[in-house]
Amino acid sequence: MSQDATFEDGGESPLRLMAEDAKDLEVISALVQDAVFPASEMSWRKSERRFALLLNRFRWEDRDRAEARGRPVERVQTMLVIDDALAVRSAGVVRGDADTILSLLSLSFAPAEDGAGTLELTLAGDGAIALSVECINVTLQDVTRPYLAPSRKSPSHP
Image (cartoon, rainbow, N blue to C red; front, side, top):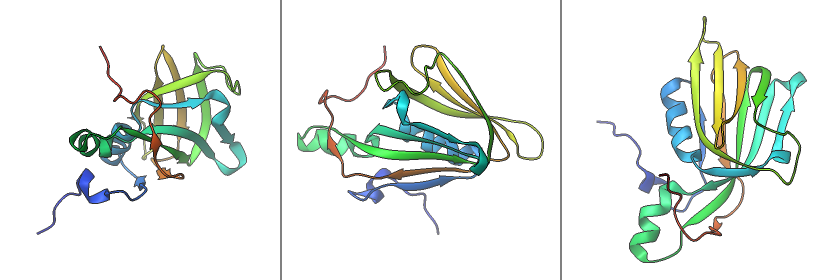
């Protein structure tokens, strides 16, 4: 009998996940909720059909363990890569500005025909990035060791 993976299965290992459908994307969306990044850490390579972000991701998968052990919560730098992207649009975002810090709230997918559609990154403060994609092809990969979250608290929403 097979069983779904749990956060605990990851332990202290860096995450490397792929999303190929809307259900997979929900998992990645949950893991990048409240990630922050400078607007300068976005990269759109039209000829490669690749959009990438370097995020400072809150380690949701470690939060309960950290709190149970009385240690501070952590963040980790993570690459969020969206391949098979055909076009990128944004609203409420000043691209390339290193002083503008954005907060990612969620990823969602609005399907069109033949697996194509729009992948939307919803940002705090009414910002959004919409990618026209040929299909869902998203990778999330931790690229640094975890570090102490500067706030020393879990993100919360009113």
